[in-house]
Amino acid sequence: MSEDAVSSEEVRHVAELARVDLADDEVDRFTRQFADILEYFETLDEVPAVDREAPLANVMRPDEERESLDSEAALRNAPEPEDDYFKGPNVS
Image (cartoon, rainbow, N blue to C red):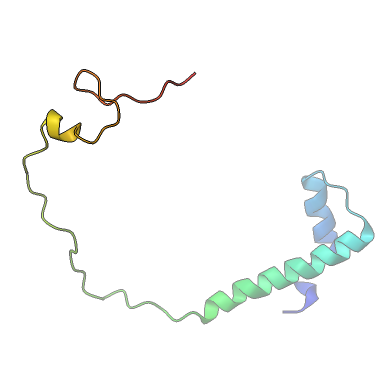
């Protein structure tokens, strides 16, 4: 892509919309950078298409109801349980 993809007038217009003052050397630099960015976007056109007809497989286990821990087992490793609850640090 040539640097003509983005003109310095377009860069000045975008800068004006963003209320950013640019010096002439900054306009030149951003013009080249915008051209480079647009060139990078063109490389996305080279990415091969994805086969959308690929078979799908469920990799998740079935959702089954199971017994949960009782409060004593759940609180067994808690540093400071209090009245069958987890006690956390005070938040000021």
